[in-house]
Image 1 (cartoon, helix red, strand yellow):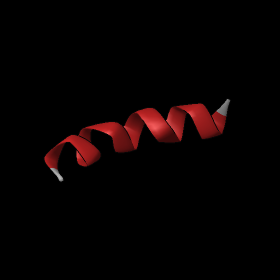
Image 2 (tube, helix red, strand yellow):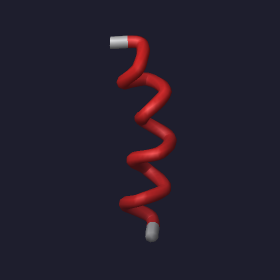
Image 3 (spheres, one colour):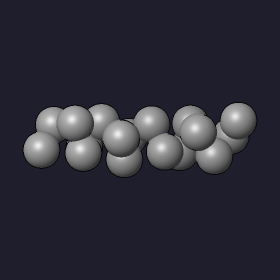
Length: 17
């Protein structure tokens, strides 16, 4: 699930947009 932790910020950026 390490990749998920790295994807967390990316997902947040997408949601922010």
